Amino acid sequence: MKKLLNTLYVTSEGAWLHKDGQNVVVKVEGAERGRAPAHLLGQIICFGQVSVSPPLMSFCAQGGISISFLNPYGRFLARVEGPQSGNVLLRRAQHRQTEDEMISLPVAQAIVAAKVSNQRGVIRRALRDHGAKMQTKAKAQLDDATRRLSDSARLALSAETMDVLRGLEGEAANAYFGVFGYLIRHQEPEFAFTGRSRRPPLDPVNAILSFLYVLLAQDCRAAAETHGLDPQIGFLHRDRPGRMSLALDLMEEFRAPIADRLCLSLINRHQIAPNQFRYEETGGVFMNEDARTVLLKAWQDRKRTTLHHAFFDEKVPLGLMPQLQAQLLARHLRGDIDGYPSYFWR
Image (tube, rainbow, N blue to C red; front, side, top):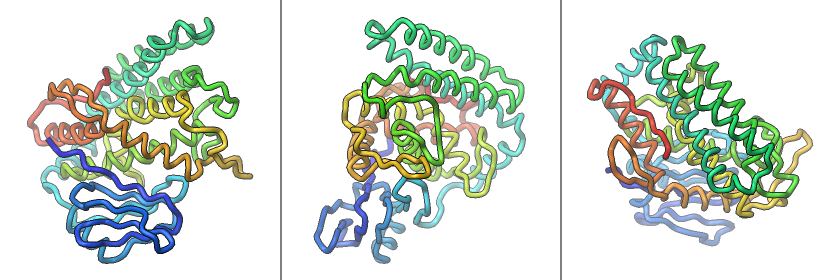
């Protein structure tokens, strides 16, 4: 089992990262703010104006520690990593299978079915824990959404074309995010949710979701590369220059159980406040540094939660699930297993 390595998040503007022996040191305005042993790190993610010394970049590249640079709002900018590893025959098999939509369809079906089922799981969990306190209208709409999601998950497994499958995924997203606001128990009007918005997010809830999805995508890209897969070539997501299509494929199964659940917990437990967001003239809403700090700590804690993985029949940290799914996809492409067993959250 792969060890769950830590991720070092650097959010302070003007931070300077350098190497000191076998440690990564973070300084702000000349004062040391923290250090971490390199052997415990899997990646470093820098937000905003963060500088990294060349010796540290070289050290991390040789040690298999990736360094990602994101803008202050969480948008990916660049990534520094060492030489690509992995079996070229595996990547060729991946490329061959994804060139034909009908051949790649079973993998995409499994991904969408798991994604939709996991979205349904988020709603069912809320109904189980808080259904008795919900208004009749909210409960009825949540019940209806679970039925629609059940239908979409079932139909996804028998979709005859990729276009049909993507249509079912879109219908499921409408059903899910159409009732997502009922899962938010926080009474502050700033946390009202009326629908998914991106680039830019138009309210605090969407700001949290978008930020979490960026973090999840980075973990899924790392998982794909760890197991020798090409993160740019996906099964469900179409190829596009600069898009991590396979990483986006892998993250679909984990949006609901990792990112969406964490978003709801942060808001419902009052861990993030309305005054921790910045509203821009363009209409975009973004978290400030205090909110990012709270979110990143909760993100790391969430990834340490252990859950049962049905295929491996053992409990593993939630943060390792993308690694396990990437491993299973690689085994499927090699012909070791007949199909791709996607992750269904329980």
